[in-house]
Image 1: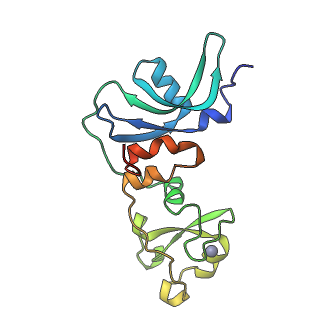
Image 2 (image 1 turned 60 degrees about the vertical axis):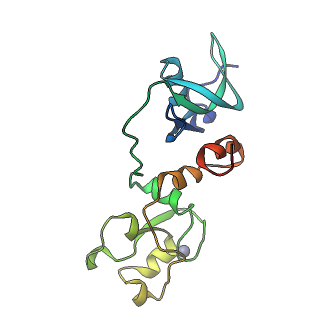
Image 3 (image 1 turned 90 degrees about the horizontal axis):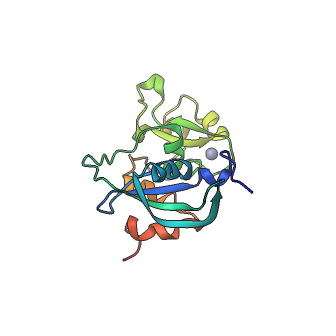
Length: 177
Ligand SMILES: [Zn+2]
């Protein structure tokens, strides 16, 4: 059977390394396969899944390495709702509930001057978000489990590691080569 362009395996995460093996980015397997066919990357590690097309069967890439060195390796993680939820491990930072739908709470409320920044935004379940409302932590008597910080990119990449991504660990300084 051919792999549909919508197949969920094509959404699996792929670690992208620079030519010197430093971690650069995470993309979808769909994008990694595209980069591979455009001769932008070499495939270093694969998942056990096979992508089937009319002309060729390809093992689903898990780690790819760029063929051309990228000089400006920006280590900033972009502040998005998804990245915030990843940083907070999809857990309410007040009660640790993982019950969806999770919301984003302003630690210092917006109407008290709170900004949309990494250190002022946390994942919160609907119940906690409603309970906290426009109050500060002290007023609401709702301490945070941990103080929010801007993630560093390596820590951020590490959070993508699930059962299937063991091969990533040496590249993210989680075990020795
Ligand atoms: Zn909660």
